Length: 89
Image (cartoon, rainbow, N blue to C red; front, top):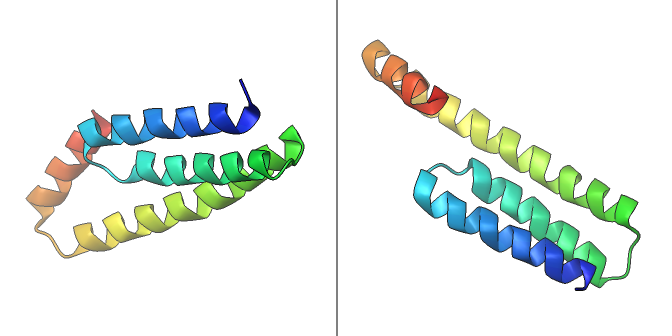
């Protein structure tokens, strides 16, 4: 199986798992995996594929984390504790 196909298969698995969790974290990681797949399709070596995947997934994940924190700042304290408890479990 080609490298790009493995990347895209893993992207599909993460998108499928995202449908069950309801958070955007796995979706951001899936976008990073897709970027790694495009790098593989372009013929880059594995090291560059991993760098591109991580380099695109990490900022997206941090952006998602900041958006969730901003959303929690506008809620009541009890809602924040409930959200954090649900997120931890």
